[in-house]
Image (cartoon, rainbow, N blue to C red; front, side, top):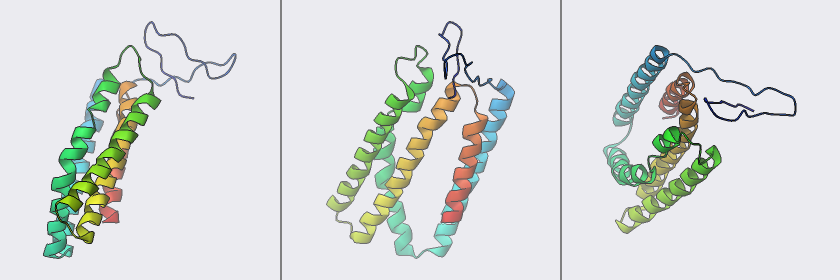
Length: 176
């Protein structure tokens, strides 16, 4: 079990007589470097996906993708509830990781259902609804990863979520 104690917090033990595993916070400059490089890498992968999709897809498919993004982005952003920020700034530890994760799962699947219903209500055909559902499902996975990133951010170890963000971008680009 991974445990991290802050000044004044009670020690967390994993088994009787054992010491908690400690995660040492990375330096600020290292965290900034990881965050900046991962943001640039992820943005380049997103740009590459857009360029590849525009070149390889038909104009109709590109329009359906744009429709799916325009429909899912506001819904999913609203239902993200800024949980990562709340999670990281919860200095008293009033809520555990499971609480944030459960809320994110519930809100994300509510958002996915909302996107599908809205796409159908707007008169999209089956393929348009399917693409909207796929785009929203990808946003669900990203949202779940965001809660995991928040847990690492709270431990002041931004190298782990930064590396995972780069991997996420590269895998997304390769999958497209």
